Image (cartoon, rainbow, N blue to C red):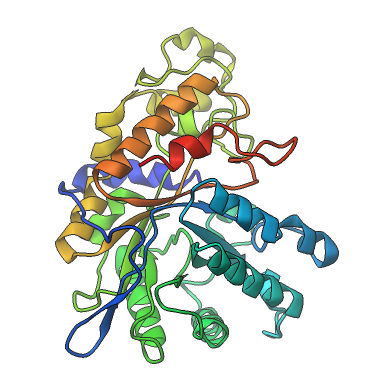
Length: 382
């Protein structure tokens, strides 16, 4: 779950384009053959992120082993989801000399096997590197896009992961290049994507690769994403947490929303009573004024237009790899109205999607017994 990218999105949000995207039908598992390369049909539908296990977690050993088990994947399938997105971190799988953490790799393979056994497809998402964290405030300064050695190591990690994963069926397992990139420029990120695709394609021309746009995969950045036009085994991925005052209301990690404790509203003007700003600093008040806008299903749909347009123009599948609303403090009915609208938009435009997340801070299960809460019925509806 992310915050900073929507601050960048404000600058470029007006530069998108409109259209719609037609994706592969659910429950279809085959490859369409072209002149030289098979076009893999990779079904996504509705999914969920199995997060805070092999990513963003301090746990190792028995504690890590027991956090997520086959029972969880059985439960995900029983809830009606079609796939999982599995975030993985370099530190969970490798030491600094690139030696394997064998128990971590065992869990990675377990996750894939448990997915396949439950007829769930799976995206393996390289989430955090030692040289890159999507939120640099939570880690040491990022060096990936400036340091050649770090870039070479990034490719080495993917080549090693490829050796581990390439035996799995193309129509069941996909690779996601990097979670929420924040390169210095669109050009830098586009070159980075091109190199990644070139590297993976030497061994796997038919593997589905998931790529997003620069600046944390916000939809408005898709107007500047360069995609090889002759490669149809690609999935375009954006993340969506808009508006932040709804999706991250009082979230303790969100600098732009955690201080505001007054009322919020959706749809419509988010903050209707601005006298509740009185306990904020002037800087925090300025952030609230920026965030306090009129939002409804039409404005949400408009935000997605650049991503929809690019996917449609290239004939590629469009995927929302993360979306969700932090449930702890916000009124339940307001939160569910936001979910209902965003799911309606996904269905209208055939946008595959994965909720953030399964058991973590935006859960689809109840903490007391692990059973489904109110979200799966909304997220998996047809």
